[in-house]
Image (tube, rainbow, N blue to C red; front, side, top):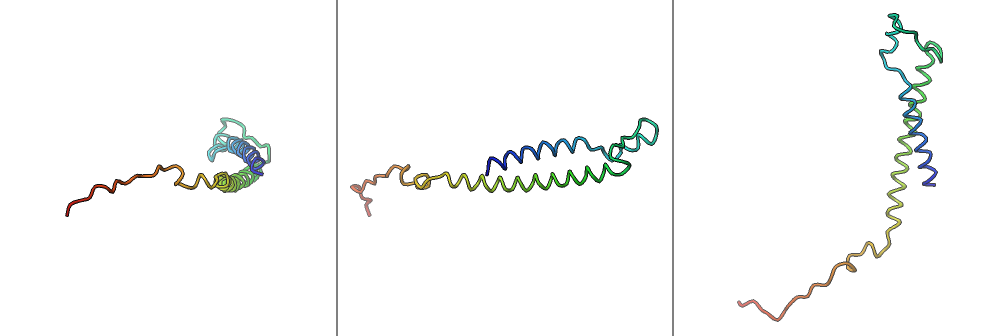
Length: 106
């Protein structure tokens, strides 16, 4: 399950980066209106903004949800991998010998 979510997370992140890089900035349409180039109308006059914005939002939500799920699963996996001997300190600390033969004068 963890490995499948990790692969889906990787795919979603790559697609999200691609969609962010494809989008145009706010001032990209002004250059076309002043004659410096033709505007790209692949999805229609206003259809590209809605499609790209919604797809980016869905991918971002999926990215954050998968991040939370993978973080939760990895923390549970790390605590499940520990054995009881890893949690006890008595095995790793050497016993301390106390010399009781010398007394403090009163």
